[in-house]
Image 1 (tube, helix red, strand yellow):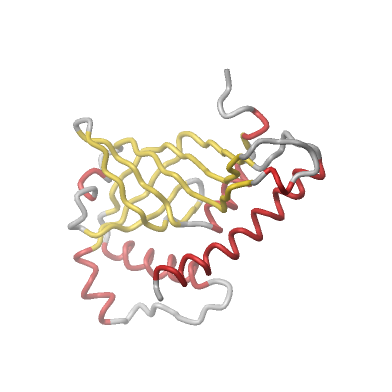
Image 2 (cartoon, helix red, strand yellow):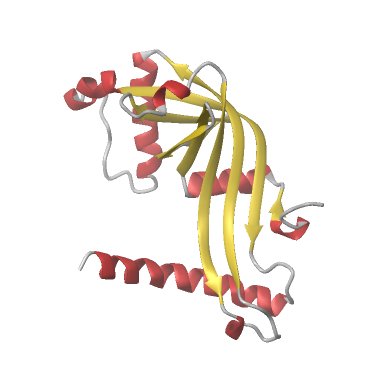
Length: 197
């Protein structure tokens, strides 16, 4: 039995890459002696690999080398879907976009590669406006290179989990899509206003 159901799976790697590029903050999971280690950090997709950087004092850092296996989750938009938005009778549900990846990780030891990678990642994250450029001669960048480790993940398995009311009538699927957009725009502002008054 497939789970989630086939209509909630997306096997198109280009769609999954779009999620990674649009929502690059990843949940990176390693396991050592049956204990999970979890870090949230941005990963950049380059030529079939994910590139990242981690603070040397993070307890997960020693696990990001030697071709160890890791799991990664990228999260797109999500929201509760009330049956009130549908034209047909339905039950409450939760819609979401997730990408699950498995891979093997290795450390990149070169400080020159690390420096260029940090510049490249900043350039990617600044797109499309590029209001800031991390310059190679930035003294703060040079001072911090000894406290950052670079790693790359070779992807061995892709899974797209796109639960977007695809099993409903077209009018209900469209309503769920609009609700996903509306809710995400409103909920961010409401949450921030509540927590950071």
